[in-house]
Amino acid sequence: MRTTPETVAELIAGQWGDHRPGLMYGASTHTAVLSHHRTAQEAAARAALLVDLLPAGRGAEPHVGVLLDNTPEFPFWLGAAALAGAAVAGINPTRRGPELARDILHTECRILVTERAHLHLLRGLDLPGVRILVTDSEEYAALLAPYTGAKPGEAVLAAPAPGSRFLLYFTSGSTGAPKAALCSQGRLAAAADSLVRQFSVTAEDVHYVCMPLFHGNAVIADWLPALAAGASVALRPRFSASAFLADVRAYGATYFTYVGRAVQYLLATEPRPDDSEHSLRLGFGTEAGAVDAARFTERFGVRLVEGYGATEGGASVQRTPDTPPGALGRAGAGADLAVIDPRTGAECPPALLDAAGRLLNGSAAIGELVNRGRSLFEGYWRNPEAQAARTRDGWYWTGDLFFRDADGFLYFAGRTDDRLRVDSENLAAAVIENILARWPAAAAVAVYAVPDEAAGDQVMAAVALEEGRRFSPEAFSAFLAAQPDLGTKMSPRYVRIVESMPVTATNKIHRAALRRSGFRCPDPVWWSPPGGSGYRRMDPADLAGLLAAYEAHGRAELLER
Image (cartoon, rainbow, N blue to C red; front, top):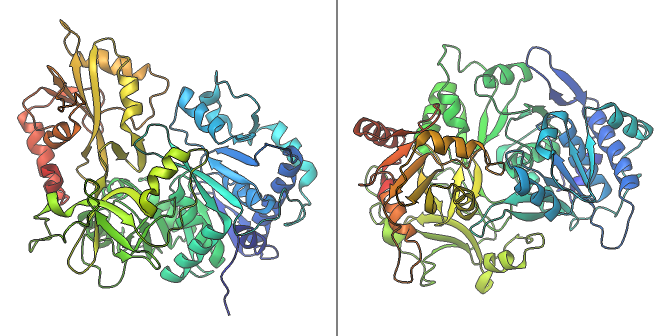
């Protein structure tokens, strides 16, 4: 009889002696395959190295930063940390300069594992006390060589237990710098087991990991369930829409996860008569949207299941067979989820939906999703203020906007006011504002989210110019390109030039008014069309095309809020 694992270390050790295919990687034309046993062996070798590199010491945390693409080294180091009783901090390579250094130092990483392709990101950064290991170097191979005979469980910093810290995964919020959510071995092992049961994962499955492993989605919803079921894992270094089907066919993949606009990128590829000829049976993720999920199923013959569950573990929504289109499901086991008006603390009334599923009472029905019951939230690393805000009044506040229909089904409605989610990345408006404020022509800047036409958000900036200055799209583009800490997802798609910032009675920027009008406003709006470069003035044809795209994706109503 199958038993629920108690730790991730148990899952890693369980691979020992299993010589079936466990890890596949490389281009679809020349795939490399490692057995489950070999992957456990590689994890054990790195655990032994880790124990020697991180001798126990007062005040020193056993944290390893991993700044890698989806190479085999990433799961090897995840396994090593689990076996050794250490923790991995996933480092986002789209961060830049001081912000990247802050992530590494904030999580107190004493070791940073990276590769040659990312060394340029570290150039010039002050990282005191951090030892850098470059996985594709001769020095790294020589360092690891003495430990190749290690076995799981032989080398530990602290005996792995359900409460052992395993991951510190960054999640952005409204207060600026990203917060590192704590994830224990026990919680993640249980989550993996739950997904195995939910999706009937077996040892015959192949999980295609194309989302980045520094993000919780790929580890928690893809790698770990494969580990728990004894399934194989196939790695793609970075997501590629054009290579997706070739990879799936080469690996015999049966399951994949997605976030952000990945599904839209796949739908944008050139259709082929054989698009449905493959082994995939299921995709699991967030933000595909009901319209594109249906298109994906029709074209590729693959069922997509939308889910909701933050890395923090504070709330989850589970889909059931009777979940209506557009909804994510109902509250997960043990959760008492409510949609709360944060201004009053009262529960929002049920949503009124028309025959097409469009929301008719959004102003009343949309509120913040709150878990009033048992929460699995384990806190944030060294951030008591954010932790207290998340768990105020004894409830877990998700920071996400939802509405609920009369039957209790929950629908995602966006992010709270000063958060943005762009192509699966959570961004804080204040961070982007601080960067844009450096532009000499800007007298004032406000950054806020506008809905993306397909999924998630896009960055919009309102800019008041210094007296006598005019907006130059070329100068603004050059300025953005010169900012070392401007992440790849932070550049505004839309720039609204205002004579002065709208303010509230207390002289705070009236973000709600800016957000409400979005790019349909009387002020000049410059935008950077998808797939293009630079900015151009939005004209009526551009606006009409955008509105048609929102209609086509079933998201036009989001522009009315």
